[in-house]
Length: 283
Image 1 (cartoon, one colour):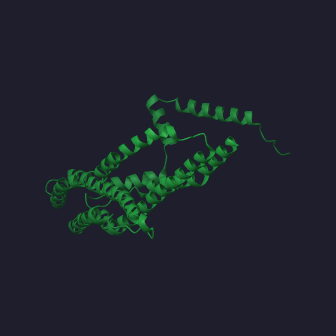
Image 2 (spheres, one colour):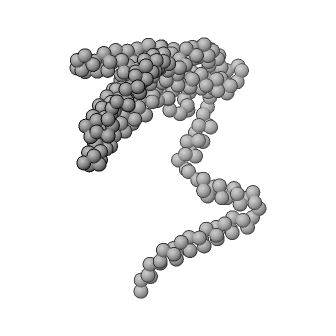
Image 3 (tube, helix red, strand yellow):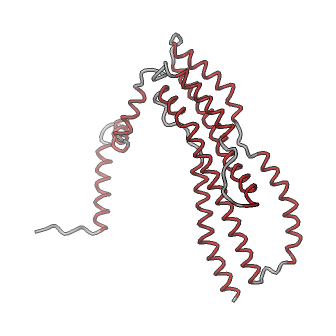
């Protein structure tokens, strides 16, 4: 005769009973032993623990000391090229008279992503070299290699600080203030309750959001493609020479692409729905 399935309340009661029994068994010994057993039971992650053990068992501060100087120089050279050329002259397609404005917007976004990425790489190398240098015995040759590389990063890292958006933001805000003031003064003469005015406003927002999402997505794509082209191989070689350093830094292009996709969804779904609501309400 087959056993009938238990009701949900019986299942919950059974799970609580098992949990109480496990707790009772854990507390039968000393509090320290009970805590240790609880941590072992709840925190067991074999794959992660094996990786942690491998990290701790690393033989030295550098996996391949003979490759490190050249890999370091190549990475620094790539950083210079990335910071200087990573966002210049992006292609924006055939947009007629709007092409210069679109190119400026795309370059603005790409420059911010690229310079932030260069800053992240320089800071990561600076910290990594400092920590590996501290792990070296004083007489080990690797200590001199790391000390030299660390001092070089200490000198050049401040030059990569700060994205390329400070001055453009000041210019844009300065130009927008008188425009917004003029619009605010004339807003009283606009009949916002008129259906045509409302639909025109929704259409203006649609065009604005569409342009903004396009600029963000194109700028993120340019920055991501050029960052990979310039930095992927140098960073891979350097990380291989250092060894057991996790993954190299990545750029923020995915974040900007996500924002662009959200804005595109607003354009195609939210704003049309708003237009329909305004049209029905005005009718």
